[in-house]
Amino acid sequence: MVSGPRARLTREGWYYLAFTLFILGGAALRQINLLVVLGGMMAAPMLFSWRCGVLSLRMTAVRRLLPKRIFSGQPALVTVEVNNNRRRTTSWMLVIDDQLTRHESGTDQRQRVKGRSTCIVPTLNPQSSCTPKYRVQFGQRGRYDFGPLRISTLFPLGLLRVMRTFRVSDSLLVYPQIGRLLPPWHRLMESENPGVQYASARRGYADGDYYALRDWQAGDNRRWIHWRTTARRGRLAVRQFERQNKPDFALLIDPWVGTGKGWQDVERAISFAATVVVDLSHEGSQEITFGVADGQADFETHTNSRIFANKLLERLAAAGESNNNQPFLRLLAAAQRDVRSRTHLVIISSRSKTEATEAFHSAASDNSDSLATLARSTWIDCSSDQWRKYFRWDNDV
Image (cartoon, rainbow, N blue to C red; front, side, top):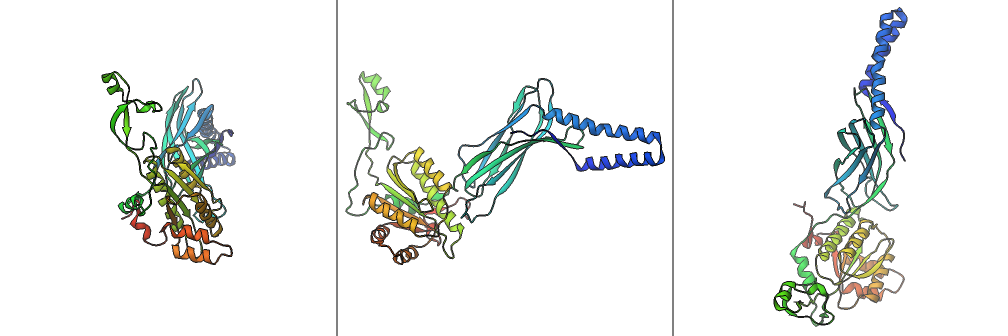
């Protein structure tokens, strides 16, 4: 939806209008014809400015192009495409204003975000387009709503601002801020419990580096073919890959905001989890179980891939807080039921393990299975300094 052109006097325009009215008033009181002519001549630039502004914005189209993937704390570019569909008239000094607000949920404790960005197009020829960009950096994760777009011009004299509003709304999901995993985290992921034998399954050609070449066998993937060796030997040769012994991985997020807990601890836990997801997306395929104990308390298991990593980041970007123990108890019960004993279970929480255990003991229902799952998990408390051992942001000193 596009609104028609509207004109508004600038501060200079108000001064000019006041001076013009002063001259016309003096001409009427004194009955001086020369001042009447002067007042009429001074009104002409106002009409000329209005007409030029309307012509500059007529048959002009604007739309925005948002980045596909953006993380909180990282700068990104938003592109605005401006088209001049007229055949003859050139547009001058176009100013494009864009607005954005963060979509808030009912339990969101973070501060409201509202911003405005501006692009300037000095000149736009007939039947042409341009793509100015503006830089934006989001300090909080979540969904942001863009719009409306407003295009305006002060051309030619700066006395009037003529504008049109394009009610083009777009939505952008900003992923949590990404930090850096420290060596103790990688050592924790590589550690294996004594006596537990992990399945050694070939997970695919992308899991490891190949260490040898062999002849083609029925059932081999054609992507494994080493064409240079095949051409030299005259028969198909395929790459032999190393087998992976990585255990499966389960990650549960506990965004607790009980008494004395602020949303900063929750954001730290979610940012930590997002960094883990991005790090896992660069590794070979392994089975990953993921759950967030907010209002949805969903729980799902997939083979690690870039597509699944993006899905998890979207889930973390939209994750809310919880002051109820039931969602987390449901996640633990699902983990007890679905997660195998050899799976490495990590819980990232905004409270301590002792506090969570005491809360679960005080619950009326039987939580013995959930507590057993809790006991064998690796618990990382983001409300204390424990998280600093495994994770840090790039802007931390």
